Image (cartoon, rainbow, N blue to C red; front, side, top):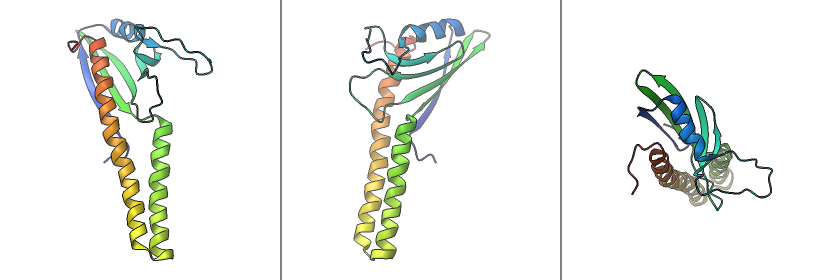
Amino acid sequence: MNFFPTYSEILVSSLSCEEVARKIGVVTKKVDYLDVVVKKEKWHQFNGEVDDRHFRLSLIINNADSFLPLINGKIESTKNGCILFLRYSLFPSSVFFLAFWGIGSVLLALFFIFYEKQWMYALISILAGAGNFLFAWSYFKTKLKQSQMIFHQMLSLQEKN
């Protein structure tokens, strides 16, 4: 079981690797995070990097979102098109946040159990840590569906609603 939210999928396309990389590249804005002003074009859907066989993307957002999926993809050629291997995960900073507060909750619970003998406070600490993970998983799933829908539409694997 993975403690941190992740999701993997495999997509098959009749397009060549170069066509898929080009389609992804058209809707992806390479961002210099040191720029003060980042201009968003209306056709850009993702921030990230794309090369011939790999890409790393995230949805373009207007507000901070700690649980936005990071899409790591690999494109492999086949006789009749290509296969995309996608892995959706949290950004490393979000994984650190969840790990830090998960470990902190457990340590706090151990402190309350063994040092203070306060079982109720220990239970509250554990429930707060578990609640943090449950919130992260549920919010990640919501954002995952949004990212998948846009990605699939971009590759014309799904009809636009």
